[in-house]
Length: 379
Image (cartoon, rainbow, N blue to C red):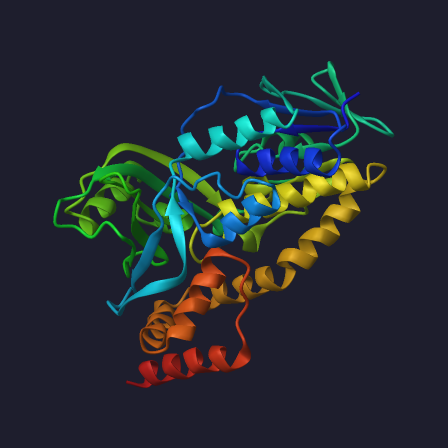
């Protein structure tokens, strides 16, 4: 009998394992993943300062210390409004091939048993769950991604298409004259919400990609590969990409309930992806940590404790991003927000905090953006 079985070894699953062993070193924790590590994962590879705080909470403050911090962020709005500034706290860009493998190694070093295994069945009993007829655990954390098998097995539907984005990610060599100390987000009016990104890693290459809402892609009537690859090349013509891979992003406005019985959904499996930026690693680390806590601190009934933890950590923030995602259906709103950020550094910092962490929007700043939006509309 395992105290906790975790399905999926990405940031959410590893965070759950690390936290459980951190709080209860004698806990029996099993981590299952269908792949061996290191393995690639389609992602923007951005590790925000908020993520580093979570890593420190997990006892891993120096996990990515050997990667150079990225000090600046440039954002171009759908209407061409541009803001470029130094971020309040630097971000990092670490390929998931490296980041995820380091987390799994840290979990293994803490005493977590890691196995390669593809989960196919779950059977619920009064005081435990049986996985594939062979593994029994008092609690299960589902960290198996956007297309979660566990979510389907416990009867929770996938995120609706209207709240799902699709993105393509690749890598590109940075030209010698290119700025390798600034992250770039270049938004596109056509098919909005849609944007391309370039995140320099620090080794002369950058993670590059393009994403848009899935209904907007279908509305083009064109093959997805043609649209995604074509728009990436159009927005970042100086950065020809290789190793392109597409992936779905279940956005948080369509998030499902966070679990059933003794099964807790975390990260992408829980639809925890920021609808404004597509950022998911911070949510993955937070939700994984909270699920690990619930599994060992309230072993008799972990789900209510996990739900309370999510509400306390992310509740106000998620309500904020729900509202902003609705407003952001108008590209004019984003133009107004970026325009305000270009003039007021505190607004820029706030947008970064909302887009990459757990920030909320004070009413005076919300009114400043709304006023600019209305004035732009009148013009």
